[in-house]
Length: 352
Image (cartoon, rainbow, N blue to C red; front, side, top):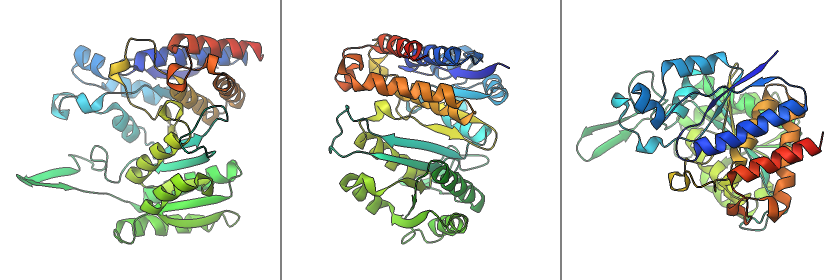
């Protein structure tokens, strides 16, 4: 049976790093005898020009029908208003596919320098469908309003259902990976109702995992502790905005966003997505680091039950990053996007 992964290149450096990712995924699947199809569809500015919307219904339907999706970065801050077709494809897919969990590991590589010199090995498990994110926390309409000039209001939605879902995802990941500690990230000393509800739901799930040590950490304290001692954390479970901010901090402490893989998943669908943006200033120059999207694709393969190809792809990435000669320029190497992908394909073929 053929594994179908829909590829959505996106904007800026998206087409370049997607081409690199498609080639490496095809190579690693072939090396393990896994039949894979990697069809592409347009999103972002290309789709806006062709279809009047940055993500068409046909693309959403194709994503729903595929086994998984590999999503390139998008320049959604530069899109026109939603009424003019400028929807954020990432937010749309998360909502339409029920992707309540955003899994963001931060792992340093021994040969890649980190800002503090400390080793990092943790996972941020971020709620994906609500919180302060105005494009996905309302059934209809936005989560921000300006009732009168000079006054802007943002609404934060926290539900018991999604709080339980993200807690279950986080604790299940900790148990599966043998991680002994979970930190519940909150600001319940100020947002007593919303973060209080989130904490109550997480505490209920924690009772099903007595073997895992649970702590509750204020978000500002968590940010400080991440910088001072990232080894204090194993798994961090957080609401949407807190998880977004802390995962970017953790990624930088682990070596940079160019290495920061992530996976969005729900009960029935999954989308691989790099943590970084579209970097339009680097587009078309063959200098973008595709490691984040490739690592995200490896996470997707593992999530879909293809542990062998996932492990081989992660191993090839680790081997390439050990040697400055086989890194991209952002990590002190000399390889471009295309050459880095070719190197990975060679390493994959040599290991089989």
